[in-house]
Amino acid sequence: MRIGIGFDVHILKKGRKLIIGGTEIPFEYGLYGHSDGDVLLHALSDAIAGALSKPDIGTIFPDTDPTIKNISSKLILEKYISFVKELNMKFSNIDIVLIAEEPKLQQWYGKIKEKLSSFLNIPRDCLGIKAKTTEKTGLIGDKKAIACWVAVLLE
Image 1 (cartoon, rainbow, N blue to C red):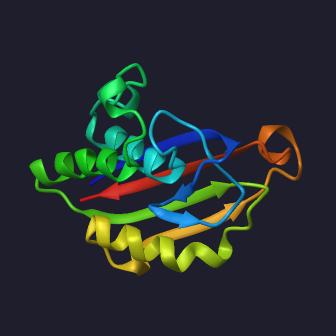
Image 2 (tube, rainbow, N blue to C red):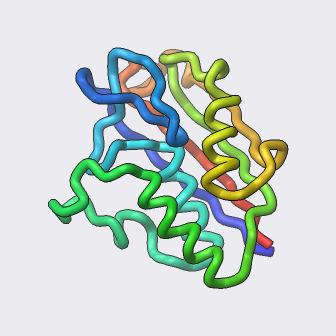
C-alpha cells in the first residue's frame, strides 16, 4: 500500500468558470490558473504523485508552457491515473478537504463523488469529501481563494 498527500490553492477571479472535482459549480467567480484551476483535481494529482514518488503537476505541466494554457485538469489527472495503472495499483480510499468561505459546497458532494468515481473507477463509498471554512480569516476567509487537501491510499 502507498499513501500520498496533495494540496492546492487558487485565487478566485470574476469571469472564470468555477470547476471543482470536474464539476462546474454556478458562482460569479472561478479559480484562476494556467489550467482551469480545479484545486481538487490538482491536489488529487499531487497526492498520487506523492504516493508513487512521481514529479508534481508543476513539473509535468509547467505554467510556463503556453501549449497547455487553459487545459482541463481532468487531462492532468489522467496522466497521474496512467502512473497508477502502469504499476498495477488501484485506488483504495481518497479523503478530500475543500476549504472555501463561498460558495457553500456541501450540495455538490454527490455530483463531485459521481465524477471522481467515474474518473478513478472507484466506488463512491471510498471517497470522503468535506468542506471547511477558515472562519473568515486569510485569503480564503476574505472569499478571495479556495484550497484543497487530498489524501490517497493506493494498493
